[in-house]
Image (tube, rainbow, N blue to C red; front, side, top):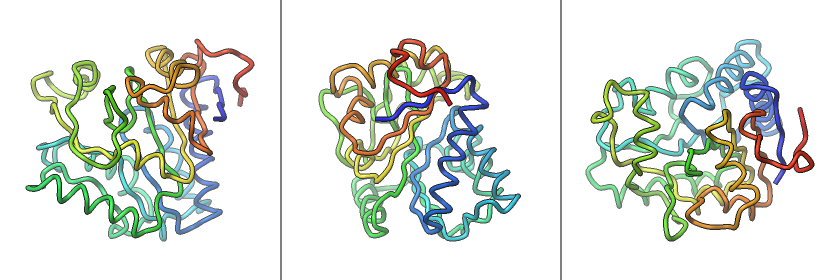
Length: 249
């Protein structure tokens, strides 16, 4: 596990965007796993700029998103479908047919989850997965549990996650209490993983991810075992880490 610590959110976003841009230029038909939430917004803004300046092209890129709320219409302002189109897909030259996002409104979640897994596998798996991290160290919407989830499926959101996400909704009652998410096993199969974190509220989760035991109650801790993981965090998120354990960029 390699750790880059950046001065602030803006720097973190640029470093992360440069990492993704390098992946796109090295392999223009990469299969990218993408994340939502407030943390990657700055990275997506930087990628849009790079696309506009023709430093990169999404023309042959395929994407698979991590998760989506259950029973929230995709046209809803808080759906991850809307988020991705507003922050990235509608602003770059990606082929819309190459965009894959979990369907939170399917009639049969078991069958659909298997289809999503098969779609990832049939494309050769994920070359690079982007992750954020929850205050409780969840990745995707894989919450602390007694076991590490294997594949895509419906998950119940914890109170802490619902509380954290309520800032995007008019009231906490509007926040969905379930989501469909890639499983940790699916994430772990990615060739490369980049995890972003910003702010003091993520410091404990980052420290537990890096230094704690590998424990399904700290879902991100499984990343200690992955062969190619890069953490890009700001100084506040890195505040509990040993200064000898990371590189300042």
